[in-house]
Each structure stands twice: as C-alpha cells, then as structure tokens.
Length: 270
Image (cartoon, rainbow, N blue to C red; front, side):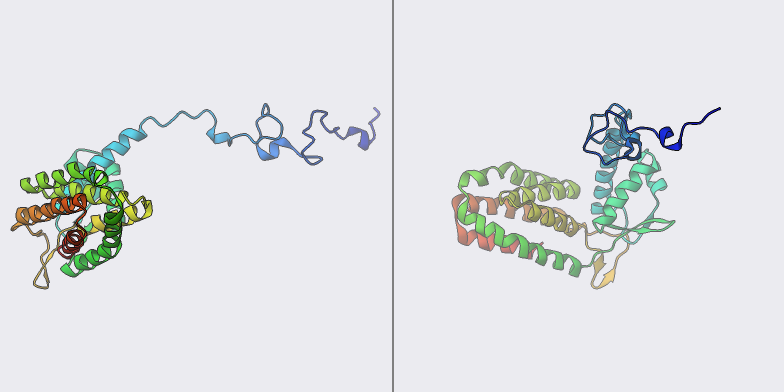
C-alpha cells in the first residue's frame, strides 16, 4: 500500500477560517462554541444552560429577617455582651437553618458587633463609654460641616422631605422601643446626608452610626457582662428625637445659628 508523502497528509487550513486569526489557530483552544460568530468568544462552558437560582432570594430574605432579629437582641441586651453564641443554637431559637444565622453573624462581625470565635461561634462585643465617645467625635467631624454647608444652600422644601422621618423617631422614642428607634434614627440621619449628594459620605457615616448604637457595657470603669443600660432609656430616646424635630425646624426656617448649636449638641450627646 502506498502512503502519501507526509506533506500531503497534513490537514489543510479550513477554508472558512477567520482571517483575523493567526495561522494554525485552533478555535477549541479558546473554548469557542462551534456555531459562534467568527471573531467572538463564547461564554464559558459552565455558564451555558444553567437555570437562574430560584431559591437565593428566599434564602436572602431569611438571612435579612434573622439579621434584624439579632440586631434587636443586641440593642436590648438580650444577647449578652461578652457571651459566645453558636449559629446552630441561635438557628434553633429562630426556627431556621444554621446557614442564614451564620451569614447574619458574619455581617455583624464586619460591623464590629460580634467577634468570630473559631469552632465556638460568635462572641458579642463589649463597648465602653470611651468607644462611643470616639465614634461620636468622628461622626461629628464628618457630618457637622456638611449639614452646616447644606443649611446655607438648600431651600426649605428640601428639608420638609425629612419631616416624616423625624416624626418616626419621635414615635419610636415614645414607645421606648430601642430597636425601632435605632432604625428610625439611622433613617433620619441617612436621608439628611443624602441631600448632600455624596454617596461615599452617606455610606461611611451610616456605618459609623450603626456602630455607635450598640449599648455601653461598663459601669464606673467595670464591665457588666450581660447587662445593657435600661434605666431612663425612654427619656434619653425622647430627648434625642426631640433634637431631630428642633433641628429640622431650624433648617426649614434658615436659622443658621440654631442649626449649628443643635447639630453640635446632638453629636456631643451621642
């Protein structure tokens, strides 16, 4: 049997090859789909034909619900500062699986509310009055100049948009609901800063604000594990909410002197 010379047995270049590709280029090397248009790259093989994840939104909702419940328990002292809690134990308490609880606790760890303890769970952070004073100082450095600048430039109609949020803080304070007040308080301050148009400022200030809401766990320099301050909490919340209402009235009326006095007093008492 005769064999063709080696040169004749080499496969010829495909006649329909993309002229933009280098000689000898093999489409299979880059994982192109055989029916893809020349010169385009197909999506990765693993991304083709996969259905959209339908259970993810439901799982995210469960995690968010657990996260809200955990934040409320932290604010009220139900989850004791210094104590360690495991995700399975908390999951049983909430009647859910451990996964959304673990995800929620990991988010709280990023916020500094808890600390991950390998093979044990999560330890609730302890806060001193000095910690909260330092957070208040940083917040004042960020927010006070911005509010004063906006007070000189924004019309009364823009400030009026905040009235329902200010009223919500007063309502939550009157109930003495610390968790509800924390959310209403952050919503008011976030909306206030959003009027500046600076998204980065809003994000940073909101994170600092959330950290400043965790209760103090020391008494005369000594830690009080498992205790959150509850005496006079309603009075303090009402006083804080009243400052929101007074600040809003000063902003609407354009009373810059009152605005500066109120906003500085608000942070000094934070």
